Length: 404
Image (cartoon, rainbow, N blue to C red; front, side, top):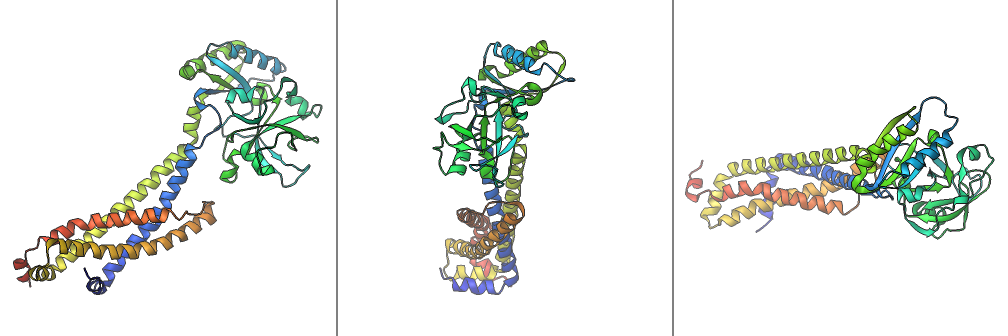
């Protein structure tokens, strides 16, 4: 089929053709960026935390009044919680993944570095074993390495060692092979890196996405009055039962306390990503609405042109054009309009992405999302025009030639 007659026909309907091209271009630009943002949100939701989420529960609590015996109470709490059937390990910690409250420290390979890297600082005795964080190099802390938080803050004790996440180790040294190297994270003296774990997620979002796994674990033990969080690694089939029993156990040890939170880590993960899921559904809804509106626009324009060209179609049928020729004519016409709109839409998509990058720190739009949007709109255009084209192909030559 010759393209020149189609171009000539479109040239006589510039306004309608221009409007549908602009509609396709705008849809292409928005859908490409929306699909990219949906992909980013889904990847964010699916990222691993670095701990055994199906085995972890968290209890947040606070004391009433001053607790001069906080260290004794913490020891009693930990012993009582470990005695619960199904509890594998317990730690009094300053934070857990998805907690939205993060303790952060600057860390560097240089002492007093003003440009140190900000990293989440996890603390707590037996914390690695409780979280299920996997060592990929070095070793865990030994019992004699642990120091009390009060002594560290009073500068009567020094944190001797540290464990880094893989991402933080690579950021600081360019490699994960860092065991035995010194870093400066707290105090005047360096800490020696004794181990590297798989990436451990920060409790909340901080800075750029790649910084989400900048974490370190320090051998600092702290009372519940400071930490406020007990993390329990339990039998995954009995989490709810054990969580309820743990609350009763803590109340039995000291009823003069308030239980602030009692959750599984999976519940915390679900709540943590609520906004991301809502944004994903919103973007998918907007994309679907735009595609439907564009499809309706193509159907409406094609139906209008079929009505306007009834005589022309009849003449072509009388001259020997088959029903397939008529259908292919309208499909090729739509393909040309869609192609013009897609080319314009790709340029517009990059323009929108540049604005999002400048205003909202959105990553650059990868090139592979443009072909996805193009194919989607080409298919949409062909399906939308198929109905009017089929109706046009049923126009009888005798009826069409009598149309005035």
